[in-house]
Image (cartoon, rainbow, N blue to C red; front, side):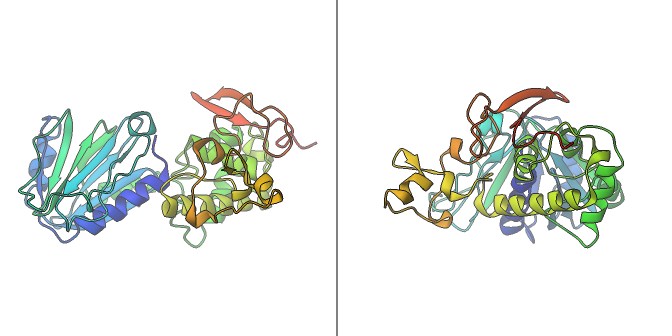
Length: 317
C-alpha cells in the first residue's frame, strides 16, 4: 500500500497539472459513473492529502476522495506542458514507480488515449489526463463529508501541525496494543505503512511488541520526530530511504568500506542506494542486522509482516 509520502507527491502532481483547469471527468469502467457526472465540467481548485487519503476539491463544493489501498494506482500522460506527471501506485502493482511523461510527451498530443484496463475514473484537461485503477475508495463527497473523514484520522507527519506530536503521543500511550500495530493504525498516526513502521522502530531502538502504554512520553515524541524526518525525505526522494550513505553499496562493497579503501562515495543527493541498501530491517529477515549483526526476524502482526532486530530492539527491563 502506498505510504503517506507517495500520496503527498500525488497531491503535488495534481496541483501542478490540474489545479485551475476545467476537467472532463468520466468512468470508463462504469463503477464511478454517478460520481463522475457530479464532477464533470467543473474546475479543480485544490488538491489535499492527509495520510494515505487524497482529496481533490472542485469548484462546485464537491470532493473526489481516493484511497488507493493495496492495488490502486494513478497513471498520467499529456503534452509537453504536462510536467511532473508519473505513475504512482501500490508497490505490488507498479513498485511505486514514477515515470516522468513531460520530457517524452508527444508534441502533437490530441487528447487522452483509449482507456486500458479497468479505469475507475479519468480526469482530462486540454493538456493531459490521469487514470485511476484499483482503488479501495473512489467517491464524490461533500466538503463536510471530507471533514468527517479527516476527523477520524490521526495526525499526519507531513503536515506536522502545532500540537501533533503531543496528540500522537497521547494516541499511542493510551492503548495497550503493540507499538508496531499502533503505528499502522491510521487513527493513531496517518500515513505510516509497513515500511516506515519497521524502519522507525528500529531507528529509535524500540521493541515493536511493547504495549503503547509502556512507551515513555519522550520516546513517543522522538518517534514522531523521526517519522516526520524520514517521511519528509520520502517526499523529496520519491522513495523510502532510511539508512545513511555509509550503508550503501559502492562497487560491490558498502560505502563505509569504500571510504576506508580510499574510494569516492557520492553524497545522498547525487546517488540513491540499491533497494536492499535503503532499509535497516524491512524485508531483511534472516540477514545480519546492519548495526549488531544479529539476524533480523520476521513475524506476522495484524495481517502484515513485521521486521525487527531482537538485539537492537530488545525489551527494556
